[in-house]
Amino acid sequence: MNTTAWDRNPLIEFERFLQSPAFAQTAKRAAPPLSEASAEVYGFMFGRFVKWLHERGLKMSGVQPGDLREFLSTRDARGRPLHSKIAYRYLRLLERCYEHLAAAPNPASVAIALLAADRPARDREMVALSPTQANQVVAHKPELTSWKRRRDRAMQLVMLCAGLRVSEAIGLQTSEVAAGPEEDGTLRIRLTPAGKQPTSRPHETFLQAHAVGEVLDWLETRRRLGIPGRLAFPADEEGHPLHKSTVYRQARNALKEAGVALPHAGGRTLRNGFAVVELNAGTPEEAMRKRLGLVRPLALESYLSAARKQKAKPA
Image 1 (cartoon, helix red, strand yellow):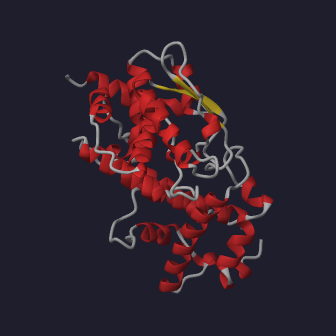
Image 2 (cartoon, rainbow, N blue to C red; image 1 turned 135 degrees about the horizontal axis):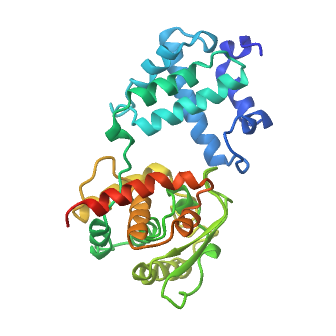
Image 3 (cartoon, rainbow, N blue to C red; image 1 turned 90 degrees about the vertical axis):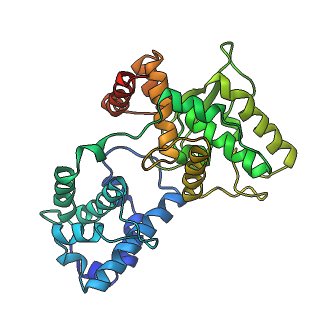
């Protein structure tokens, strides 16, 4: 494919690619239609890369794997280096662009291989709450001085006690949450991809019984407030969605307030903690895979590894 247009106007060409069927064809697995939220995230990521290209006097067609590794070593607006998982997301997005451009070899593919080879083993380990830490978070009762604080607490509980991804919690609709608990005290949550990130799959999970009361209380508060729309955890009284960065920051603060200190803690840490707790409590692997919305059986392996390590640690 001719790269001249991409060299001349990379942002315009990327936007066209993003909205075309060709973008979906570069996905590694079947995915739902691209959401507005995902398109915004991809646009921000690619825009940052293009800004870096301009600063270096580079063009898309001339980028080498070493250039991409240099790009990943740059720091964000707050002076922080890219976390390894975020770095991989950047490379995967660029890999899709260069695949679309039929670049051979694909510089992003080579950079991904180099990143995997160089990454320390500790960076590949999953950060997850232990059962003790999970109980610590649930038992900690923060001062809920506003409806937004109650919303934040309930949202954190559906990640920690039902295993929702951050994107799934942001896009959770009130209709996806059962009106009342099951016979065993858990609360059924039926998730659909609508309004969520492409990583979400239709699946069903169950909120652990000890968190049901607080979540249902919040949903009743939301109903009384008369907030429009269907989002279970709206950002404001107009019913707009929360931003991912806000949810991650709130999760980190909640862990800190509960006295839990972990590296790179955030919303994903809560989901990981749910998996570890359930697996160590004896939940069958297939049931756990379904509750987490994982398509491939091997996708559970990292959770199993984290659960084994947590179980092997002295109490």
